[in-house]
Image (cartoon, rainbow, N blue to C red; front, side, top):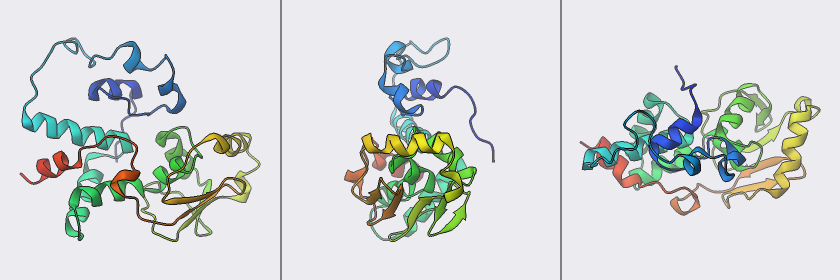
Length: 208
């Protein structure tokens, strides 16, 4: 499956908001949105009237890029969310939040979801005691995420563990920062997501 490998800041500029694709850098004056907030391209600064479809499309693209998933993946998540009981949009966001790479990021073990995805792919983590290297795994309530013992000797991993102390974690995760483990204790709700996503627009887009 192809994955976007271009400049991350270009995606933020296209969506007109910080997607926090570069971690702490996004909170500094180096952030592209702060320095040059217009959309990329020759006509990026031009004012454009956005129709209803355009708003729906942009919201889907924003959510897709925020979580770092591809078009086919995102559509599959939507279709599964639509088949579940409850609100489709909230089901979709809950599923995206429970991706393993996002959980690693949320527990404070990575500067960004892109970094978290790389750490998982390189098999630095265990899920319920078993080695995993698939970032798209959807965790369940009761699942425990931990760092492989073999990885704890890495200087990079040591630095990430130390940095966990200063990071906030969502209430649906029970994080032991000393042991660098996290347990899923609840299904994340809409209010647990600290990023503005109008999921109703995404539902409207796919319902056409």
